[in-house]
Image (cartoon, rainbow over all chains, first blue to last red; front, side, top):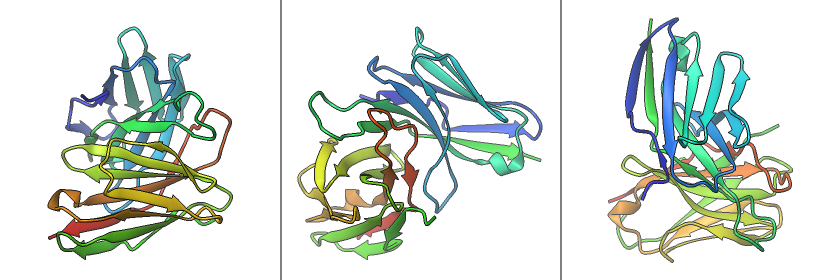
Length: 119
Length: 115
């Protein structure tokens, strides 16, 4: 059963417009959420994160919104640029089990959304 | 500062063989996690090592194992390879920040193809 879902496998947006990538989750134990960007043949790179106690975090062109009651988060990219074309992964952090010394917990990823920004 | 280094980048193995993948974390990082990425399943957590001890484990069969050395470098091993093990294997390193970890730095991955 998928705990983190990205229901849109792909999204196409015109340059300069807003890109909105969505993510839904089911586990109330997640304590923060992250977005990663991945180009082909490269590892994912961290974009932005949000704690479960916040509802918005902004970093330049990237803003993440969290709606805890709906268990939904979204990444807004404004304005979108062709260089933003990549696969975007939503990830949720699951805290370590009790009594696990030193564990960072682990990240649970969605399956990704491929964003194409057209010039 | 060098990033996370994974070797080899590409690997082709036949069914039934075993394989060992290597990950060198960012200098100073002590936590190393491994993930498997497949088109159908996305990224899935394999295991996490810290101070040479496995601290957390995902839902993978015992054929998947790993270890961490005193210099924080980590290896993962897959024995009796199956076709379904073909995937991109990603290693991520992170600082220990109390109970919180806001970012994990990923390597470029090892692309394993099982034929």
